[in-house]
Image (cartoon, rainbow, N blue to C red):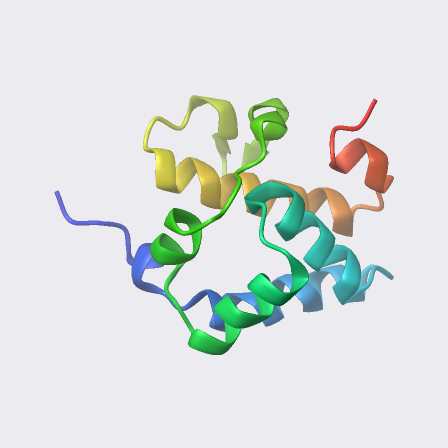
Length: 117
């Protein structure tokens, strides 16, 4: 079975779309970065390096230094599919990120987005 096209898409090409979505709703690029770093374990410098290298989504997620164990708490529907029911690990990680950015754009408090107690 062929891999979904998003896997080969440059993360650097999608990142500005995440930022634009958040900024349209009054959030900041720093908050988008915080969400991405929380999910993947990248530092700000590590995230910047990955964006600079223009790695694809699959590589960006595969090289994530410390995927947050609380990412499994991310639940809900993205693109008509329940995130927690996605079996393919890479696609599930992409949808976790999509869901977190959606929550950010909807004005949810950062503590709730990051599943903090």
